[in-house]
Image (cartoon, rainbow, N blue to C red; front, top):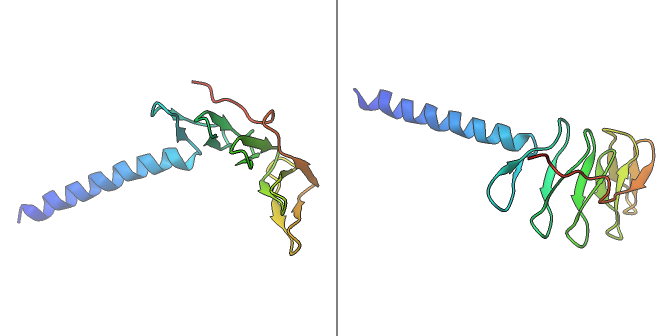
Length: 123
């Protein structure tokens, strides 16, 4: 009879720990090369580039790795076009999608993603 509550307690503890870890990852946080979590500004997302450097999107913006595995960002959602170039919606929190020809279409028009538009998370 004592085994059931103990098992239930262990299960609940595991679920709570999992929820805390996923909540942090759900915010777009990633671990740097030293294992320290780096988190973006609210509404942003972070990625590690080929060198292990963490870069974050602007609030409401997009981030992707380009063909050289370097982080590039834009004001809205970003996507790769049929040539592998990353383009983003010019509108904050704007959407991007590819049409049947592989061209990216964006809310408010598209702009080229740049590394300069990304930020370094504050430690």
